[in-house]
Image (cartoon, rainbow, N blue to C red; front, side, top):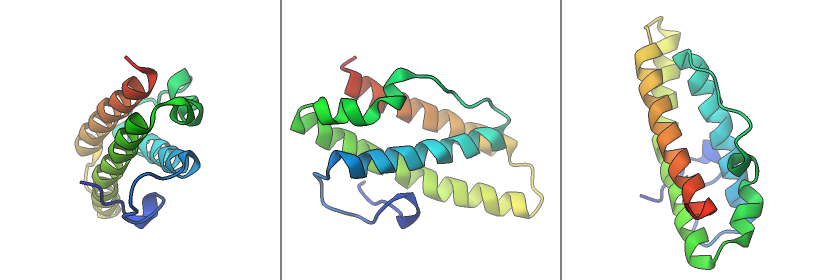
Amino acid sequence: MNAVHSSFGGSAIPLLLDADTTSMRWSTLTGAGNIVAALAGEQREEGVPQIREFTVLLQDCPTWKRELVERSVNDLAAIMQPGMATLLSLNQRGADIQPAARALWQEFVAARAAVVDLLAGV
């Protein structure tokens, strides 16, 4: 799935994008992840060098890998957008969203780790 909601930095744009555009999407997703972490009652993770160095790693990787990373970032955005919209809607209605937020946070962390591992060559 390559659909990306406009709130996460763009519309469905053909790959291969420039590294800066993908990096902006990554940054937006990282911010969204921090919001989900807060809603889940989890501590956000900071200081992971590969997350901070995403742009440099992306610029230095081969074209095939960059395209795969871009698709992965788009897929993560496609998961996060409806998940966050649902969490925020339920929160506004006074529902206990912590279990659902925790599940979304765990999915985000796993997907983010996969992208970082791909970029870092793990």
